[in-house]
Length: 223
Image 1 (cartoon, rainbow, N blue to C red):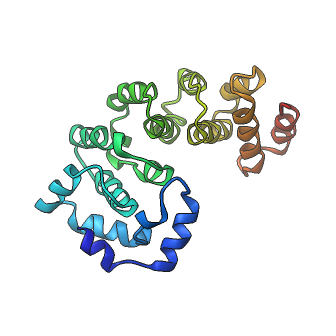
Image 2: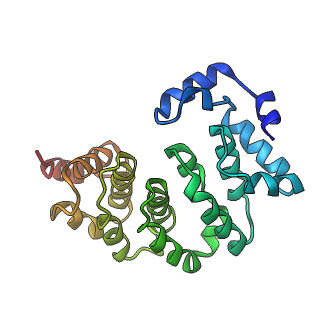
């Protein structure tokens, strides 16, 4: 598998990518572009060798983690897919792999997914928590929304940048989709000051927030 990834290597892209993910050493990037990784994932998803690859964790290279995430995301059986996610999450070590891990089958099994999210969001691992918040943002801000979900996110207290950035992203999206239910969390100072202000910043930058709402949010910034 590693040999196939090196056959797809793009050194300029490797250098660019390494700059976006500073917590991973540069020599741990191969430099495979995302479309190539997605194509490879689809090609090998059902191969016998792929099962061995998914079990061979932790992977050495960032690109191997990305490929792993894309393969899992193609799963069609909920139980098998959520099991694969649980096995992989402890080894996710960067925001990009965390955010690329997005199984399509979860959309059809939200009721079954929710207990896992409630467990993941209490994890001590940065990217497991980030993933849980991302799943709430992706699957539970529309018809399946309930105010308990932003309460869960607001209840996460962390010094980790990549968790707090996801919390801010979640609330900016929640304000765009569920403004009336979400604005009290900003009004009441439910988030720490940095995350609070970052959520407002992202909201103000959004085209989905009205001008009046943006002006009100700006007035809620904390110093």
